[in-house]
Image 1 (spheres, rainbow, N blue to C red):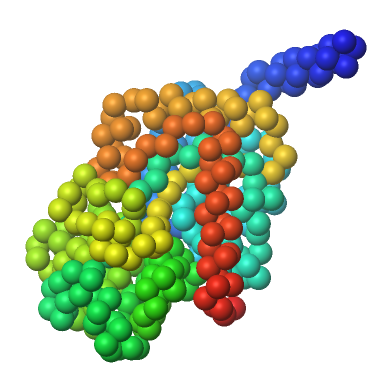
Image 2: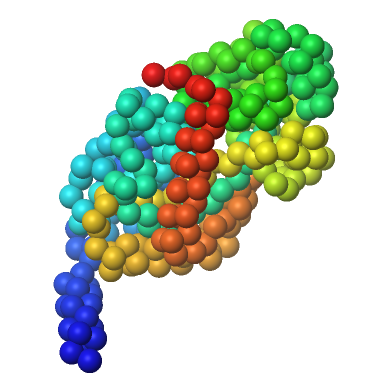
Length: 318
């Protein structure tokens, strides 16, 4: 009985200590360039949190090393709830593929706050490519080993590992061409220098509508509402190649549970708002409401899955 009362007293004191949180501006670190898709969602999120918390939520872009620079900064920041990190798929892919360069552990060094949304990528091909479907592309790659050029946003990113997963599952030999971002890779695809890549649906949708590129398959387990006629990878026979991009918020490990729960509660509030739902639906993603444990499980599963791929495919990226 005494131990129970002591635990309740400690919890009560902890809640009282953080009752005034936040009482000053919060910094939301975005480890990607301003103007990118993830940055736009981060700023939208910051605006909503600011409205609800009645304190400024300041977005700060800290770019470099495929997101590792900004991520490392948050890992070393005070665990007081005033420095947060907006995460996307590179948070786990870069740590899994290039652990020495990344120099952070996405599971041990961070306290998950909330998973916001997740959605598939889409495989696209140049309109003049000698294949018009995913099944045809697989057949082409097998008949022409090393000749099919695929562009990514850089080594270790989700676009790159989506390719390595695909090669591993389909037994194909495809040439990886890394770029400094998905935009220049897309430009080269439209120009015919490379034949295929994966990108987020909103980023490539204009090129699909113009007829300059073809959609081959989406990497989720169901079809996208934005591309209802495009099959999933499983429908094309490429089983085990599902890949998701995601957005979420984490804090430095050791951030008090009361603060984490407060922030999570605020995220749940804005995810229930119609304008937020419409905004994220336009990005071709699904909202992912839930407690910090949902993001914790997502990060652990994604990170461990990519680490297994690195070992199975014998990737040497550093």
